Length: 321
Image 1 (cartoon, rainbow, N blue to C red):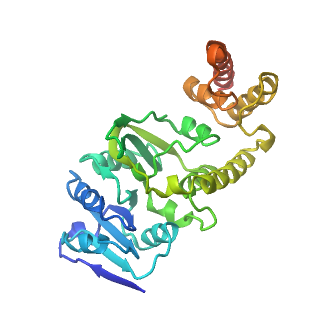
Image 2: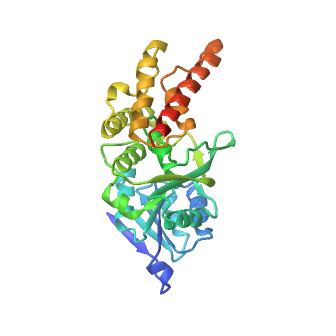
Image 3: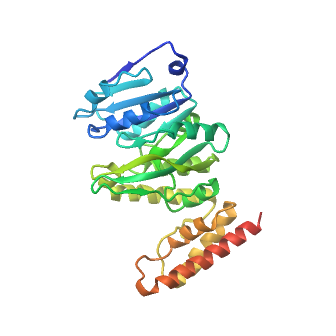
C-alpha cells in the first residue's frame, strides 16, 4: 500500500515545477539525508523532489519525514516494489518538463540543476549527463570521471559501455514516460534504457562540468548483482547493435590478433558508417574492447595497433561527411 504525503503551498514554483528530481530510496539511512540536503541547496529553485521510500526496514522513512520543505513530495510503500517500479512510478507522477535522476546515496553539487536546465532549454540535447566525482566510500578516495561529451560519441560508446552516469542524468520527462525502465532488465536497467532511447532517435550529451558525487560502497545493487547485470548488459548490447544495423557477430570482445584485425576493424568501419562524427578518442576506446588487457611487454604494440585503427576509422568516418 502506498501512502502519499505531498507538501503544498501557494507559490507557483511548487505548483508548476520545471524540474522533477527522482529519488528512489531503500534502506538508505546512512546517506539519504545528505542526498536530500544537496537537492534543497541547489541554486536553481523551481523543482519538486519526489522521494519514494520503497519499503525500507531501517530509519530511512524517519529521516525523510524530518524534512518539511514544500517542494518535497514524500511517498511511502509498505512493501519493497523494486527499484525499477519505483523509478517508473516517480516518472508517472512527475509534473516537471524535465526529470533529474539522483540516487539516495549520491550528492548533487549546488549548480547541478541550473546548468542542466540551461543546457536542455538551449536545445543542445534531449537528455544530458555530466562529468562527476566518484567517491570510494571504503577508502575515501575521490576520483574524477572520464566522460565523452558529444551525442555521436555517447551513441557510439553505448556499443561497449554505459557512457552516462545514471544519477547525473536530466532529460525530458516525456522520454521517461514513453520509454519506462523494463522489469526484465534488472541490474543493468540504466544501460538498457539508454540504448532504447538512442535507437528512438533522442539526442544525448554530457556536460563538461562535475555536477554530482557518485558514491561507491559494498551495499550497492550494481556490486551485489554483478553477474546478473553482465547478462542483461550483453543482451541489451546485442539488441543495440542489431538496431544500428550491425550484426552481433561483430560484438566487441577480446579476440586474438588476427581475429580482431577482421572483426575489430570491420566493427569500427560499420559503426562509423552508422554514426557520424565519432571522435578519435571514442574510436580508440571502441577498438580497445577487442584487445586483451595486461599485455605486459606487448603493451606498447597493442597501443600502437589501437592508435592506427582508431585514427583510420576516424579519418574515414569524417571523409564521408
